[in-house]
Amino acid sequence: YNIIIELTDNKFKKVIMKNETQNSDSLSFNNLPPKDYGLRIIFDENNNGQWDTGNLKKHVHPEKVLYHKDI
Figure 1 (cartoon, rainbow, N blue to C red):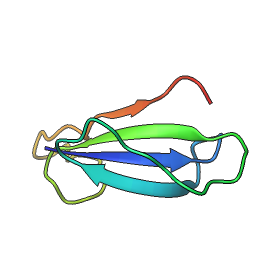
Figure 2 (cartoon, helix red, strand yellow; figure 1 turned 135 degrees about the vertical axis):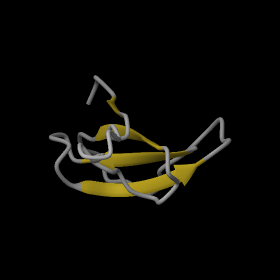
Figure 3 (cartoon, one colour; figure 1 turned 180 degrees about the horizontal axis):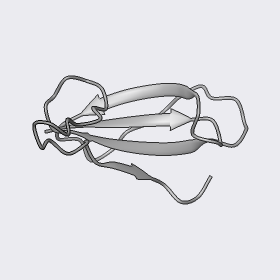
Figure 4 (cartoon, rainbow, N blue to C red; figure 1 turned 180 degrees about the vertical axis):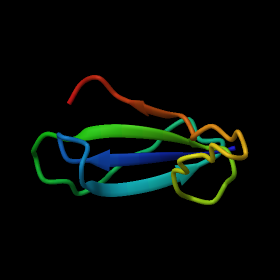
């Protein structure tokens, strides 16, 4: 599956930059002004390029999201 890496503001509300990868060991976000950022990782199981909430009626769980603990 695809992995979506999102660089966000420090409250994880606004996405600053987004990158998708399948088999990459490294990733870089260039030309960023110095400030606090958050990092969110989405495991895009259906490869549609976005986080899906799941479906209770079809017993489909939401896609897994990890938040990096440090800002």
